[in-house]
Length: 261
Ligand SMILES: [Zn+2]
Image (tube, rainbow, N blue to C red; front, side, top):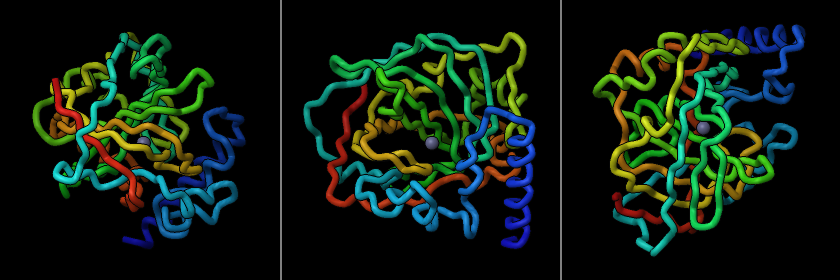
Protein backbone atom coordinates (compact mmCIF):
# COMPACT_ATOMS: atom_id res chain seq x y z
CA UNK A 1 0.00 0.00 0.00
CA UNK A 2 2.74 2.43 0.96
CA UNK A 3 4.78 1.41 -2.06
CA UNK A 4 1.92 1.95 -4.45
CA UNK A 5 1.25 5.34 -2.86
CA UNK A 6 4.89 6.26 -3.52
CA UNK A 7 4.54 5.33 -7.15
CA UNK A 8 1.36 7.35 -7.27
CA UNK A 9 3.17 10.42 -6.03
CA UNK A 10 5.89 9.96 -8.61
CA UNK A 11 3.29 9.63 -11.32
CA UNK A 12 1.58 12.72 -10.01
CA UNK A 13 4.80 14.72 -10.02
CA UNK A 14 5.44 13.53 -13.57
CA UNK A 15 2.00 14.67 -14.59
CA UNK A 16 2.54 18.02 -12.94
CA UNK A 17 5.92 18.50 -14.61
CA UNK A 18 4.38 17.61 -17.97
CA UNK A 19 1.73 20.22 -17.48
CA UNK A 20 4.40 22.75 -16.56
CA UNK A 21 6.30 21.91 -19.72
CA UNK A 22 3.12 22.51 -21.63
CA UNK A 23 3.16 25.97 -20.07
CA UNK A 24 -0.07 25.33 -18.21
CA UNK A 25 -0.76 28.29 -15.97
CA UNK A 26 -2.66 26.18 -13.47
CA UNK A 27 0.38 25.44 -11.29
CA UNK A 28 3.07 27.37 -9.53
CA UNK A 29 6.26 25.33 -9.41
CA UNK A 30 6.31 25.21 -5.59
CA UNK A 31 3.01 23.37 -5.63
CA UNK A 32 4.78 20.33 -7.08
CA UNK A 33 6.72 19.64 -3.91
CA UNK A 34 4.15 18.94 -1.22
CA UNK A 35 1.49 16.36 -0.72
CA UNK A 36 -0.05 13.98 1.77
CA UNK A 37 2.28 10.97 1.33
CA UNK A 38 5.52 9.93 3.03
CA UNK A 39 8.33 12.44 2.41
CA UNK A 40 5.81 14.93 1.05
CA UNK A 41 3.48 14.43 4.00
CA UNK A 42 2.20 17.16 6.33
CA UNK A 43 4.85 16.32 8.96
CA UNK A 44 7.48 17.50 6.45
CA UNK A 45 5.76 20.56 4.99
CA UNK A 46 7.64 22.91 7.34
CA UNK A 47 10.97 21.74 5.86
CA UNK A 48 10.04 23.15 2.46
CA UNK A 49 11.27 26.64 1.52
CA UNK A 50 8.80 29.29 2.63
CA UNK A 51 6.61 26.87 4.54
CA UNK A 52 8.10 27.15 8.06
CA UNK A 53 4.76 28.30 9.49
CA UNK A 54 3.38 24.81 8.87
CA UNK A 55 5.63 23.67 11.73
CA UNK A 56 6.18 26.80 13.83
CA UNK A 57 2.78 28.47 13.62
CA UNK A 58 0.72 28.38 16.79
CA UNK A 59 -2.63 29.29 15.18
CA UNK A 60 -2.91 26.45 12.69
CA UNK A 61 -5.87 24.65 11.11
CA UNK A 62 -7.64 22.26 11.19
CA UNK A 63 -8.61 21.67 14.83
CA UNK A 64 -10.90 19.40 16.80
CA UNK A 65 -14.18 21.29 17.32
CA UNK A 66 -15.93 20.46 20.59
CA UNK A 67 -19.38 21.81 21.34
CA UNK A 68 -19.12 21.40 25.10
CA UNK A 69 -15.87 23.35 25.35
CA UNK A 70 -16.87 26.25 23.12
CA UNK A 71 -17.46 29.81 24.30
CA UNK A 72 -20.73 31.65 23.62
CA UNK A 73 -19.78 35.29 23.06
CA UNK A 74 -21.96 37.89 21.37
CA UNK A 75 -20.49 38.09 17.92
CA UNK A 76 -21.26 39.21 14.41
CA UNK A 77 -23.02 36.55 12.36
CA UNK A 78 -21.91 36.07 8.76
CA UNK A 79 -24.56 36.80 6.17
CA UNK A 80 -24.33 34.98 2.87
CA UNK A 81 -24.91 36.80 -0.42
CA UNK A 82 -24.17 34.08 -2.93
CA UNK A 83 -25.18 34.40 -6.58
CA UNK A 84 -25.21 31.66 -9.21
CA UNK A 85 -21.89 30.83 -10.88
CA UNK A 86 -20.83 28.83 -13.90
CA UNK A 87 -19.30 25.47 -12.93
CA UNK A 88 -15.56 25.82 -13.58
CA UNK A 89 -13.59 22.99 -11.97
CA UNK A 90 -9.85 22.37 -11.89
CA UNK A 91 -7.95 19.41 -10.47
CA UNK A 92 -5.01 21.15 -8.78
CA UNK A 93 -3.25 17.90 -7.88
CA UNK A 94 -4.23 18.58 -4.26
CA UNK A 95 -8.01 18.94 -4.56
CA UNK A 96 -10.84 19.58 -6.99
CA UNK A 97 -11.45 23.31 -6.91
CA UNK A 98 -14.55 25.10 -8.21
CA UNK A 99 -13.55 28.62 -9.27
CA UNK A 100 -16.50 30.91 -8.57
CA UNK A 101 -17.75 33.76 -10.74
CA UNK A 102 -17.34 37.22 -9.22
CA UNK A 103 -20.25 38.82 -7.41
CA UNK A 104 -20.77 36.55 -4.39
CA UNK A 105 -19.88 37.69 -0.89
CA UNK A 106 -20.04 36.99 2.81
CA UNK A 107 -20.53 39.97 5.12
CA UNK A 108 -19.46 39.99 8.77
CA UNK A 109 -20.25 43.25 10.50
CA UNK A 110 -18.95 46.03 8.27
CA UNK A 111 -16.54 43.74 6.39
CA UNK A 112 -17.22 42.10 3.06
CA UNK A 113 -15.36 39.11 1.62
CA UNK A 114 -15.58 37.74 -1.92
CA UNK A 115 -16.20 34.07 -2.59
CA UNK A 116 -13.28 33.06 -4.83
CA UNK A 117 -13.49 29.27 -4.90
CA UNK A 118 -14.57 26.17 -3.02
CA UNK A 119 -12.90 22.77 -2.85
CA UNK A 120 -13.08 19.41 -1.11
CA UNK A 121 -11.03 17.37 1.35
CA UNK A 122 -11.45 13.66 2.07
CA UNK A 123 -11.82 12.70 4.82
CA UNK A 124 -12.78 15.88 6.71
CA UNK A 125 -10.04 18.09 8.15
CA UNK A 126 -11.97 19.42 11.16
CA UNK A 127 -13.63 16.95 13.47
CA UNK A 128 -16.81 17.76 15.39
CA UNK A 129 -17.22 16.28 18.86
CA UNK A 130 -14.73 13.58 17.93
CA UNK A 131 -16.37 12.66 14.64
CA UNK A 132 -14.50 12.65 11.34
CA UNK A 133 -16.75 13.09 8.30
CA UNK A 134 -16.17 11.53 4.85
CA UNK A 135 -15.79 14.94 3.19
CA UNK A 136 -15.32 18.60 4.06
CA UNK A 137 -15.89 21.54 1.74
CA UNK A 138 -14.04 24.85 2.10
CA UNK A 139 -15.52 28.05 0.69
CA UNK A 140 -12.56 30.44 0.40
CA UNK A 141 -13.25 34.18 0.62
CA UNK A 142 -10.77 36.96 -0.09
CA UNK A 143 -10.44 40.46 1.33
CA UNK A 144 -10.17 43.71 -0.67
CA UNK A 145 -6.53 42.86 -1.50
CA UNK A 146 -7.46 39.49 -2.95
CA UNK A 147 -5.87 37.64 -0.01
CA UNK A 148 -7.65 34.63 1.49
CA UNK A 149 -9.15 35.97 4.73
CA UNK A 150 -12.26 33.98 5.64
CA UNK A 151 -13.05 30.31 5.07
CA UNK A 152 -16.42 28.67 5.59
CA UNK A 153 -16.08 24.96 6.30
CA UNK A 154 -18.96 22.57 5.63
CA UNK A 155 -18.87 18.99 6.92
CA UNK A 156 -20.46 16.43 4.64
CA UNK A 157 -22.17 13.19 5.64
CA UNK A 158 -23.74 10.41 3.59
CA UNK A 159 -27.43 10.84 2.90
CA UNK A 160 -29.63 12.26 0.17
CA UNK A 161 -28.32 13.10 -3.27
CA UNK A 162 -27.23 16.73 -3.52
CA UNK A 163 -28.94 18.09 -6.62
CA UNK A 164 -26.79 21.24 -6.75
CA UNK A 165 -23.68 19.12 -7.38
CA UNK A 166 -25.34 16.56 -9.65
CA UNK A 167 -23.98 17.71 -13.02
CA UNK A 168 -20.58 18.80 -11.73
CA UNK A 169 -19.88 15.52 -9.97
CA UNK A 170 -20.58 13.58 -13.17
CA UNK A 171 -17.80 15.58 -14.86
CA UNK A 172 -15.11 15.82 -12.19
CA UNK A 173 -11.61 16.53 -13.56
CA UNK A 174 -9.82 13.28 -12.71
CA UNK A 175 -6.17 14.16 -13.15
CA UNK A 176 -3.82 16.92 -12.00
CA UNK A 177 -3.99 19.91 -14.30
CA UNK A 178 -7.29 18.87 -15.87
CA UNK A 179 -10.14 21.38 -16.06
CA UNK A 180 -13.83 20.69 -16.49
CA UNK A 181 -16.61 23.15 -17.30
CA UNK A 182 -19.76 21.21 -18.27
CA UNK A 183 -21.63 23.20 -20.91
CA UNK A 184 -24.39 25.28 -19.38
CA UNK A 185 -23.81 23.96 -15.85
CA UNK A 186 -24.54 26.46 -13.06
CA UNK A 187 -24.28 26.24 -9.30
CA UNK A 188 -25.28 28.39 -6.36
CA UNK A 189 -23.08 27.84 -3.32
CA UNK A 190 -25.96 28.76 -1.02
CA UNK A 191 -27.38 25.33 -1.91
CA UNK A 192 -24.25 23.82 -0.31
CA UNK A 193 -24.84 25.38 3.10
CA UNK A 194 -26.88 23.64 5.81
CA UNK A 195 -30.33 25.08 6.46
CA UNK A 196 -29.44 25.67 10.13
CA UNK A 197 -26.56 28.16 10.10
CA UNK A 198 -25.13 27.36 13.56
CA UNK A 199 -21.35 27.65 13.38
CA UNK A 200 -18.05 27.34 15.19
CA UNK A 201 -15.69 30.30 14.85
CA UNK A 202 -11.96 30.55 15.54
CA UNK A 203 -8.75 32.14 14.22
CA UNK A 204 -6.66 29.74 12.14
CA UNK A 205 -4.66 29.18 8.97
CA UNK A 206 -4.62 27.75 5.49
CA UNK A 207 -4.58 23.95 5.85
CA UNK A 208 -2.10 23.66 2.96
CA UNK A 209 1.39 25.14 2.49
CA UNK A 210 2.36 27.88 3.17
CA UNK A 211 -0.08 27.50 6.13
CA UNK A 212 -0.60 31.28 6.30
CA UNK A 213 -2.22 32.41 9.56
CA UNK A 214 -4.72 35.20 10.23
CA UNK A 215 -7.68 33.46 8.61
CA UNK A 216 -11.14 33.62 10.14
CA UNK A 217 -12.72 30.19 10.19
CA UNK A 218 -16.47 29.62 10.29
CA UNK A 219 -17.22 25.90 10.34
CA UNK A 220 -20.89 25.04 10.02
CA UNK A 221 -22.03 22.97 12.99
CA UNK A 222 -24.50 20.95 10.96
CA UNK A 223 -23.32 18.79 8.06
CA UNK A 224 -24.90 18.75 4.62
CA UNK A 225 -25.66 15.50 2.80
CA UNK A 226 -24.32 13.97 -0.39
CA UNK A 227 -25.30 10.54 -1.68
CA UNK A 228 -22.93 7.61 -1.18
CA UNK A 229 -22.22 7.70 -4.94
CA UNK A 230 -21.38 11.41 -4.84
CA UNK A 231 -19.03 10.91 -1.89
CA UNK A 232 -17.42 7.98 -3.68
CA UNK A 233 -16.92 10.11 -6.80
CA UNK A 234 -14.57 12.33 -4.79
CA UNK A 235 -13.00 9.51 -2.77
CA UNK A 236 -12.09 7.60 -5.94
CA UNK A 237 -10.28 10.44 -7.69
CA UNK A 238 -6.68 9.32 -8.24
CA UNK A 239 -4.12 10.66 -5.74
CA UNK A 240 -6.58 12.88 -3.81
CA UNK A 241 -7.58 10.46 -1.03
CA UNK A 242 -6.52 11.28 1.59
CA UNK A 243 -6.00 15.02 1.20
CA UNK A 244 -6.67 16.13 4.78
CA UNK A 245 -4.12 17.72 7.09
CA UNK A 246 -3.91 16.21 10.60
CA UNK A 247 -5.50 18.07 13.53
CA UNK A 248 -3.39 20.91 14.91
CA UNK A 249 -3.00 21.95 18.59
CA UNK A 250 -5.35 24.66 19.84
CA UNK A 251 -2.55 26.45 21.79
CA UNK A 252 -4.98 28.33 24.00
CA UNK A 253 -7.15 29.76 21.24
CA UNK A 254 -10.81 30.41 21.93
CA UNK A 255 -13.35 28.51 19.84
CA UNK A 256 -16.83 29.96 19.96
CA UNK A 257 -20.11 28.44 18.92
CA UNK A 258 -23.12 30.39 17.72
CA UNK A 259 -26.55 28.84 17.52
CA UNK A 260 -28.41 28.68 14.26
CA UNK A 261 -31.27 30.73 12.93
ZN1 LIG B 1 -9.25 23.38 2.12
